[in-house]
Length: 81
Length: 189
Image (cartoon, rainbow over all chains, first blue to last red; front, side, top):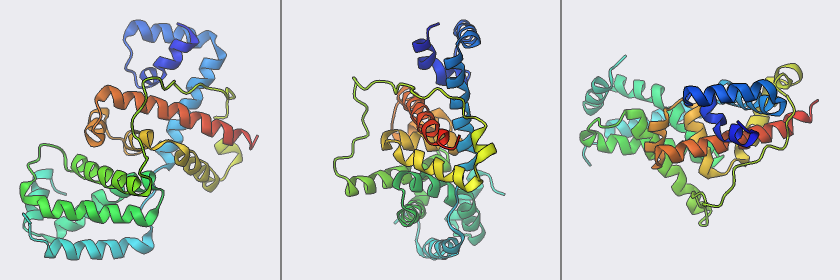
């Protein structure tokens, strides 16, 4: 496998979507190519950081107001309008 | 706790506990998608309101062919894109045939930088900057797949793309964000 091919298959490799032959070829390439190894590791770390810290929530100060407004709408809205 | 069918039935009866469950389960999910797309907290809250009210109005027609979360994400995604289009009428979500794969430029291993050299707030700020720079055509897909943990199939339904198009966009989003974070995090070294 070449570096270009590895780059093309990188997400499928990370998501375990490659067949056995391509997985083996990717692993062989990664064992000898430092740049592609860094590419894989830093892409996985990028995904990890977003999964870990990307979960923002509605700011607490406005959450209750939004809840109240939507609850009023819920109780007043007749279904099938 | 409700099953989805029980929840829909209770919402149709206008059961207040069902509303509380719905709000607690889905408001932050819808908010994150809208806030990520719009980069505007108030506008994102508007999308949450719009999506929930649409659901209240359509409860009797909700057939359960898609999951409630998929339905709400789809309404919210379309509402957010509408707002983006009003803001910027030239917005395009298409990928050109000749558009090339992002090329990796920075190949330094920064994996330990966030934990070793940055506070949590600094990492958060770098993630926010990176995702704000990600073109909208990739942003919704990345948020749905990586932050919300939605399957590729559901992401495709929500965004109206084919599964293969959703996969291509996710791949490009990952490469784009990796490059951006590489650029910004290497400054701390």
